[in-house]
Image 1 (cartoon, helix red, strand yellow):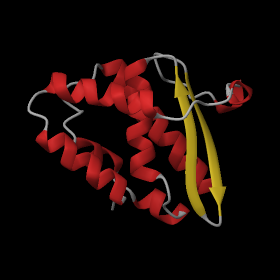
Image 2 (image 1 turned 90 degrees about the vertical axis):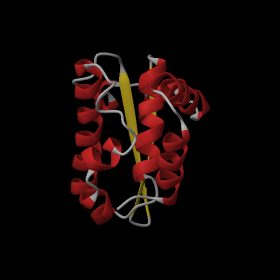
Image 3 (image 1 turned 45 degrees about the vertical axis):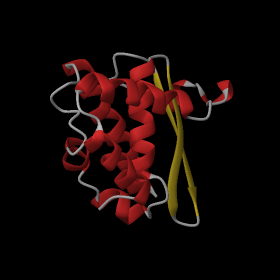
Image 4 (image 1 turned 135 degrees about the vertical axis):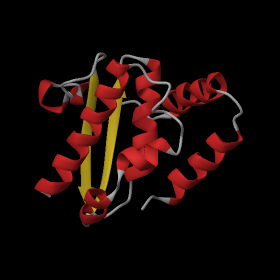
Length: 135
């Protein structure tokens, strides 16, 4: 299960020949994300387990999941943008049914992220799943 935005992202990644092109694209995705207001960069919204600082602010309206996010690292901001494409607009039940490792694997990220970045990505996915489960 994935969103049309994530499918489009997966198609773009399929056309990018090498990891350096994909890496640059991830950074560009992060730069294109709307800024998270400083008022939301608080400990309660900070994701633990990330090497860089990461904040995720969930927004649930009419049973649909969305979030805003920010990081102090460019590549991590891009990973937040990828997760936004994966989850934004889904129902809470759909969020819980997403196989994030499989979907993200389609982008070829698994082989190229450092273990710290991979752990941070897992922590962000876990926070999203916990938020959806709490409803």
